[in-house]
Image (cartoon, rainbow, N blue to C red):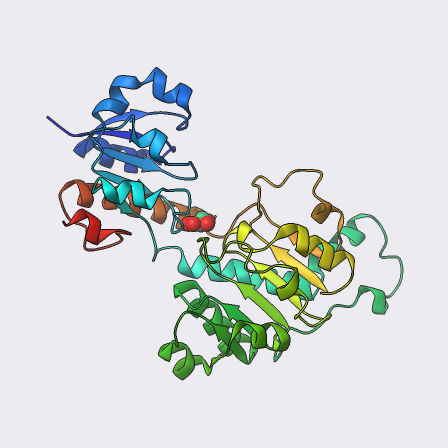
Length: 325
Ligand code: DGY
């Protein structure tokens, strides 16, 4: 008999077929208590779980006594209770490699869009305001050769550094848990403490995962260290930045602009003050959202689940030590 899995995200047909070759699949819309009650038997029998963007906590796990592996279609896994999974030796699989270049593209897009005020001036054109040759009130600031600060030098930080160094001649500062030899040798990146980075960078790009240590790391005190001409870019996780403090800093003109792909609450509430600010570019968490990359992430997650349920957790596993015990 094939192992049972719960699928809580739509998959392209060919990937669904691949999943169904290996498993008996129960498709559900989401992971709410109502869904669990509706499919109680399937949840009770499920050995695998596949999807993204839903909370997987102790309460859910209590309904899944047979669970052996959970595979998320994302690199981030802050919505999982990893300790609860590990305590039961359940493998947590993710997709850390396939989205790197696409998310770095998104970061670079935010750098360019905020500095050159692309969205704001394009809106003015659409509104019929381009009636004569433009003056300084339409101008932006340069990107090339400005200093880029990268907070979090993982795969995505490195891909961003590559773009900035070779494409835009930008000096790069970075802060991370440890020195990154490749970033220093290939992109001439300079390691510095966070406060120095905040004081010196023209662009501060946040590429950090959400953990207890990074929650609200960018608070009012940290934002106050940035130059008034500097721009904050966040494409990691919303709660890494204290959004109220960011709004206050923008309103007071303490920083020049913000490019945000992630927010404390997603979708961003329509009454957020951020949406009223012309110097804020707000994106709907599109970091990895291209057809190609979302397909590759889903394919990777399917393969990860097949591997994990076959006892293979040497790749893409968040908690291999807990599983292999
Ligand atoms: C991830 O994979 O964690 C990203 O946030 C999705 O774009």
